[in-house]
Every structure is written in structure tokens, then in C-alpha cells.
Image 1 (cartoon, rainbow, N blue to C red):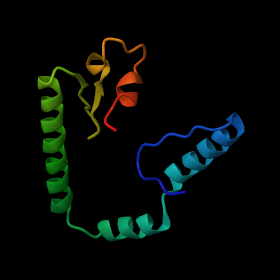
Image 2 (tube, one colour; image 1 turned 90 degrees about the horizontal axis):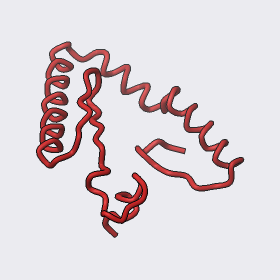
Image 3 (cartoon, rainbow, N blue to C red; image 1 turned 180 degrees about the vertical axis):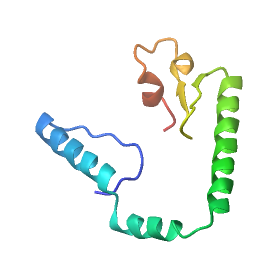
Image 4 (cartoon, helix red, strand yellow; image 1 turned 60 degrees about the vertical axis):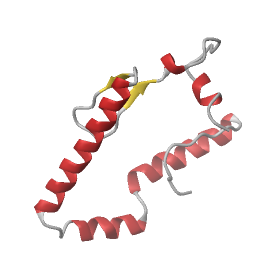
Amino acid sequence: MYERGVGWVTASPELTSAVRSAKQFLTYVSSGPFQYAVAEALRLPAAYFDDLRADLAAKRDLLSEGLAQAGFEVYRPSGTYFVTTDVRPSAPPTASSSAAPCRSGPG
């Protein structure tokens, strides 16, 4: 199993429990190739990380501002680059749950 981002599993409770256990383990141990990449990254100059941090912060702020201007409530992070927003206002008027925008999305 490789982590590729957000995903969903629909299965029996026993299988869901097994998948959840595997996912938790993989989240904390990372993959072997990633460990080599981190070792290489530790050799990079501090300026590389300063530039990366500034670049990611600027992109986070741009996304946050765009979502706010589009009318979403944005939960602005103070210690991460991940942005969270409330999508319920974009749900169709007949939606009965917060999952409705996902279910009525494209395709």
C-alpha cells in the first residue's frame, strides 16, 4: 500500500480496521526511498529551506485569500501550509449533509 493522498475505503468493519492499521503504520514509518531523500535534503544549504518556506507560505496565502474572496470560510493555519475551508455553503439547497458537495461533484 502506498500513500498517494486522501482516499476512502468502503468495506466490512474487520477489513476497514485492517486498512486503518496499515495506514497508521505507513504514515509514521515513511517509505524507504523517502528516507534516502531526507538524508540528501539534510545536506542542502539553509537558504534552500528558507526559500522553500517562503514559496509555500506565499502559495498558502494566495489560496486562502482566493477561497475567502470566493465566499468560503477559511481556517487560516498558523503552523502549517495546509488550508482548511468549510464547503457547506457551496452545497446544493437540497443537500442534507456536508458530504453532498463531494457526491454531486464533477463526473
